[in-house]
Length: 324
Length: 255
Image 1 (cartoon, rainbow over the protein chains, first blue to last red):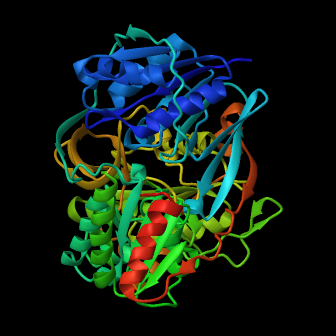
Image 2 (cartoon, each protein chain N blue to C red):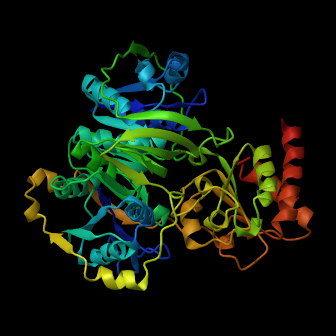
Image 3 (cartoon, each protein chain N blue to C red):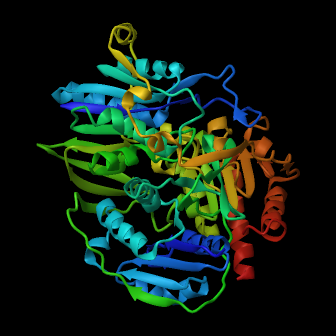
């Protein structure tokens, strides 16, 4: 039986977020011939209609109200609750992003729904849907399903295929009733240099205590720039104040699953491994051949990162320009 | 000022996970207070030291969970509440209903809790509690400044900082960077033993059956597939680097 699915899509820095393409693809799979609805917020939403069509949404709701230009919990919860009442979906999907993490639990509580967060696999099983998600930061996984009623999940970025399936999309302007906003966003201080969210990065160059200083992260940043990736760090590097905690990967930091994770001067404490061991390809660069990071690395170079990393940057620069 | 801190007891981050018959084994496991909740306790204690506050730490779980509450009391909380829950982990729906049932009869100006627990990692319960209480929330805060009846907070939003104004009472979920949680002092640990720790059974909270029945069911728990042993490159450093670049581009195709 076809299901009616509702996807909250997101834009960031003038682009549709990759996780939204992933969510639309999952939506089509679980809809099983049913209807995929999608919402986008903000004045530029209409520019993404073609993209949304390409990924198979049958209906795109656009919310163009200046009170949702910047995310606030109250404005979004009110708007999305009203959309849920309008669409009456069987399944709601959103990215496990800053917005998804803040909005989904609040929406679930308001509408008295269950919610399965941070899913890495979604498999239709007859009329039901089985969700897999990491626990203990990926040291283990669990499969969960809903007892009954509406299905609501957030999806971890970078874990699903984004497949095109063009369709005709009906565009609907949705005017929400928004009132009593209880938080005011005074300012947003951009600290990420356009690199975007670590959870969505395809390539991550990560540094540990072996990087030795803030200055020591420079060669890592250069390599990341050449590869179009992002820089991250281990807890050791953050605790030593080489970099900001927002870059920390691990059980008490971010959990990431990029295509390529290059660990530089990271020994590989169990807490760090929990945050990155599900990356597709792991490269370790470390002076200590006994470092535990080599046990989970696909490729390892035993050597000084300050020699290896600049050589990598140089080689990639060469080959990437040749291929370009 | 009354501050409530919602916390959870979790496995120590050093622990490996062992699964027996689909259940996560607790044998020989060291338990700690969820590290994100330590920031919440620390922030509450800092406020208490600066302007005075009565701090109540609240959790849900089997009797072993009391030790996490004692840690909070040793750090400076004044009293603690344990909701006894001996079954398999409550899902976020059930946990938030139980906690909200305890909180709604209390006075509070501020509720703090970690932005997620390092075991289940879903980050839902505190935010659900805020909704059930009808108060606003701010998530993943890295700075909290209380003014007269309002607060200015800084939030970590995917690495950027968002500065938000909000009126009390509200709930905030705490993020790394907010503070440096203290270690309980020996006198603190001694004092904690005498501080009130009240337990509630689920029956005492007189909730409807549907509020206590989980919305979701765990079907299976399993360990990820073990990674195959990797390849340590050999030879001259420049040759290793060239080989790696070649592999990543042409064999692994990740660049």
